[in-house]
View 1 (tube, rainbow, N blue to C red):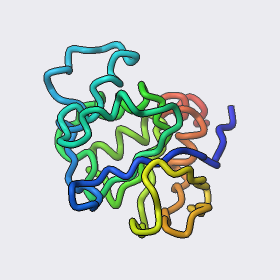
View 2: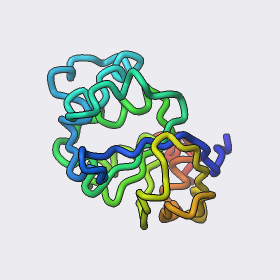
View 3: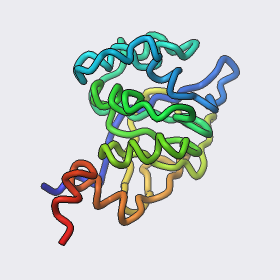
Length: 172
């Protein structure tokens, strides 16, 4: 199954009250530990960002194929897989950050959730919930206010396979 390398989606600029992308969003802010007993993927989404001040209503407003844009060190903290799965539950199609926590990055890539590194963004020339097109292969966008790095070969291979386990089945 060949997945599309062009993503089109409504972007969510996850900003603070000063209009800056929020840095250091840890896994507890993404998916609070009080919900860790939930194992049904379909139920996880409703708790996304439930512990992130100013964004507690995100899950109620998110739509299929939305794309999240955040600051540095997204997903720092624990290795909880639910912090990746909650976005998959909401059908968020990608997360773009200046940088990712190492374990979160690995979990997202292994799960086939596209995570993209933000090269630059001009927050004065892009609107929250604006539609933007991203090319995963070459890192190009259709908006001059946002630039991303392309997928690595391994990340693309895992994404195209669906997840790490599916990718591993195809290794010869």
